[in-house]
Amino acid sequence: MNISADVRNMIITMLAEGSPVWYVAGMVNMRSHDVYTIGHAAGYPDKTKLRRAVWAAQNRVPQAA
Image (cartoon, rainbow, N blue to C red; front, side):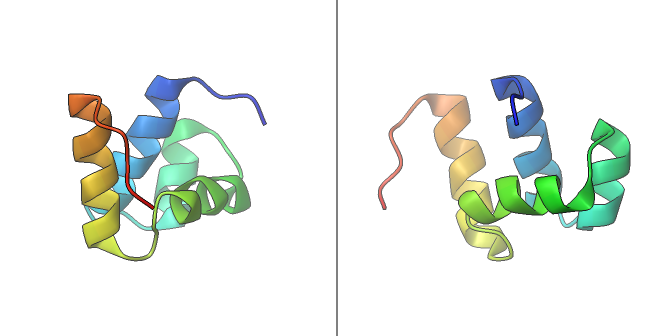
């Protein structure tokens, strides 16, 4: 799966804001499984981890594991 960093950040941001996976998938025209995989890599379903990922991406800070 080859997606831009902007689309990845948009997916993570929408999930962090509480949008359901199926809704985000419809908005970015992707399969729900792909959206879930991207979100899960960033900490989904833990919204705190997702918010940290969004903050780190916006501030270009490397994420701690």
